Length: 490
Ligand SMILES: NC(=O)C1=CN([C@@H]2O[C@H](COP(=O)(O)OP(=O)(O)OC[C@H]3O[C@@H](n4cnc5c(N)ncnc54)[C@H](OP(=O)(O)O)[C@@H]3O)[C@@H](O)[C@H]2O)C=CC1
Ligand SMILES: CC[C@](O)(C(C)=O)C(=O)O
Ligand SMILES: [Mg+2]
Ligand SMILES: [Mg+2]
Image 1 (cartoon, helix red, strand yellow):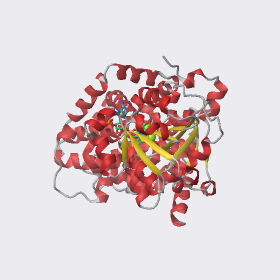
Image 2: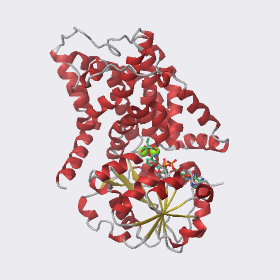
Image 3: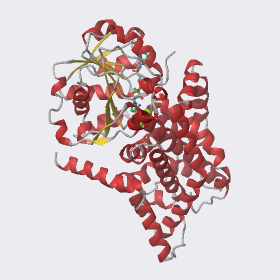
């Protein structure tokens, strides 16, 4: 039985690693993928991250192949199809791992202990093992052979986006880290930088972080604003509209595409721009609704962060892993069974502006969720830049997944830890918001404010000031500025 690594550290070390976050200069990537050129990169697993990272790394000139478990090869499962269908060499662990200079573990987190235990004895002396999420190291306390270097390259995006951005000539923001206990040759950072350059991450912004900061912020973001809040908001907004007589097909469409539309505004100009897309009276309504939501939900957000910090969340989830995912599978089935999921959309067109005008409550939920996640993360010692990526930055990407095929699709594409945490949040948040929702009328969700258009100038000025001065807006403006600058110099 391994021990939670974070909990084993003295407080000062915990705080130091939680606060580790340095935005790296583009010049630090001047060597590009050179440190990995000619080396053998073997990816274990060919799913959401495995396939897309592998395609990028190969297109960047690196030698990539896939080690899959024997059964996946024999049964020609999806992972085998993904890899062979894209012309990659595929082999068993025994065939490929012993020659690998870098083994990229891109299997689901719940398999990491088993996979690493099997792969590690096959790895050659002095090779490097990488992860895209620090769960196994931080929460499970996985012990890695002393001669091996252990790094993390964690794209802050779903795998599909990792590939799409690369094909557009860019990349996605990425956190890199070296596990302090496993850097025998002092080459971890060089390898992590080359790997991040190979995926295109260096063109979008790389944070030098720690395994701990990545895990504690990633889990928080995905459970609360990214997936939990959007799932809860979808179900509550749909059900309330139908209850109040809105056509179910219209309600389903407004919710399914509404998140994507309003968070497109967020992507370009933060909460300020998303709120500016509303009329002045609607903005003031959304602002007050968001304030109310923040008051009601703050204890829940804090509970999620506390449980993540203490290890309660991970041990609860690991119990479910040991129980053949009994809870996860029940919750997944229940999500598929919601009225929102099962209702067909109307064929009637909803214009871009109508999504804002008739979705004031959805805008308020996004604002409240992003701000709360950011506030609670930073209060726990996570640095603003990390908190921004794990809240505001990723929200539009997850909203895109809902636009594709509603909540089921979102839960399929995100990682297993994200899916589990999303259900936990959703099941606690829906009852918490029951009284609040009972007061919502169709003017804020479904039909819009109509002729209501008077505002008090002083109130509008105060609301605008409060929106613009939130810390997530300050750091967001800087980070989006870097991304725009990087795009424009290519
Ligand atoms: N999903 C995402 O967008 C993100 C994921 N990450 C991280 O990336 C890592 C990979 O996650 P993700 O891409 O979602 O994983 P997926 O669930 O998409 O892919 C899993 C792959 O691993 C294989 N696999 C499953 N079980 C085992 C096992 N026991 N032994 C060996 N191979 C196995 C599967 O193939 P088969 O079953 O055919 O063998 C499949 O190819 C995780 O650490 C995750 O936290 C980080 C950022 C975002
Ligand atoms: C949903 C969030 C994420 O953390 C991600 C795509 O970054 C995941 O684990 O899937
Ligand atoms: Mg993430
Ligand atoms: Mg995650």
